[in-house]
Length: 592
Image (cartoon, rainbow, N blue to C red):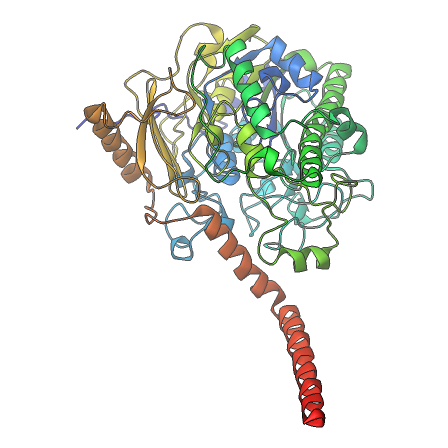
């Protein structure tokens, strides 16, 4: 059996011995600042620098000054991606193998499935703080809220963090009935949001505050901003949304085709590479009523407006760094946690009652504004994921192939970097530029590799063609080996079967080669099984359905949180039925 080498480079924490401390102080003026800008649920082509429709001049500026990775992959879900990005460690070793919202009850006590960063796992903030960096974080955390779970316990000097999969962008309230409130924390203490809150604005405002607090300190900083854009609820100020009126009126089939054609023009995929069809359950745009078309077109306009609003506030951060003299010595990493979000929360079971209770509405006139619960749904998500197949939740390319931009000092401008990269490579890349040496002494070693050799031109690839790279979240699995990939996707959009693709010629995953190349297929399955055994991947049952599990967990959470209200409503309904029945019986008796 082929011996598997999974991202074998390990990085350890550089502990502050006296000599190293002295070196750190001497380097303080020259080591780069690090800014990580993490977008939520953006597909490969959602960024304008990768061919998207939204106006994003500030991210375009960073893309033009640095490198655009076109074969960068992440996990199919938010929390595992964030855990891997911040640690360089495979999600199953971080403790965040999946997300709480789709965790099976029987998996809760299993190693790697605690839903908290486990002992021995060090974040990039832990490591940089140990060598003299100031460390700040604002935005979505979603890596545990128990004692010792929040950013202040994982290396961040200052943090204003949301510990949930998402929340409203206009006010402090939850976006789904899995939560009773929006759990925001500042430095580990429950916090309230300001009256003029809008998520992208607030995260940048607070980060600027933190940077200003440390302005007299010559040491470099790490600034991690985890935006809510463009996660559900899709919300944006009207002045940004209005820019996209009519842009999406032709529907999702047209957008998907247009992005596929643009991907060829930009060199994201080879000329003539086939485009996967829309999922079989996808609605035909022309079958919708005019009212439905208007609502769905507006939903995508708000989605683009939310990206533009985020970019506008990123521009404010860039201007602040420029004014403070820090911009030229700052490395920027801009990426997304996973592909586009297909969920339709508005029409899910139990949502009508919950929306009424929490003051949410869904109407075209005010879509995106305060009180609206916007989403784009599976058809738009599939179109936004072009040229990949499927979307968030799944290990198909539409769910895990996302944009990555790295720019800053010593990074030469280059249009595209075509070598494979993985989310676990971000932390070792940062450590490389920060001058933190690698060791093998960590209790839980880093799995990723530094991208610096590729960025500097010293290497063409980060991983050798014979190095298998495994990935799994909730049964949605992939293994990459050179140009080839095997993948398995769960119900309802997958069927739980393994398939083999050549991504060099078929990035849309349209032609299964498992029967044509059975030896390669079996060898890669062996590689995946070795990965699963090494990293503690729990096997899902064949009929595991990620959407059904999410629905079940959410309904159970509603019963747990709102049982007395549901009981009261049921009692009122039952009482009304009894009264109506007695009245009817009296009438019948009287006529009789």
